[in-house]
Image (cartoon, rainbow, N blue to C red; front, side, top):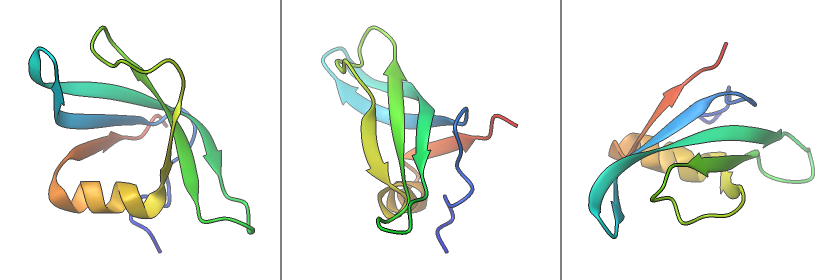
Amino acid sequence: MYRTGKLQTGDIVIFIGMKVASGPTDIMGLIVKDNRSPEDDPSVLVQFYGETDGYSGPVHYYHDELDGLLDYGAIRIIHGS
């Protein structure tokens, strides 16, 4: 079971110290969709916000990728409910 297995739409993921043009900064992402399909590994779509994000649409992350980032201390998770 993934430690990020309880992620759901509305949760917030803070990416800590992301490298952007202006230097390291924390970037907030909102989970806009979760995928719990039995045909695929659990995953979420994260929409980033802010002037420095550089993304135009949601970014796909598998739960095992987010677990690795959580272990490394590169993200924080805030549950919406």
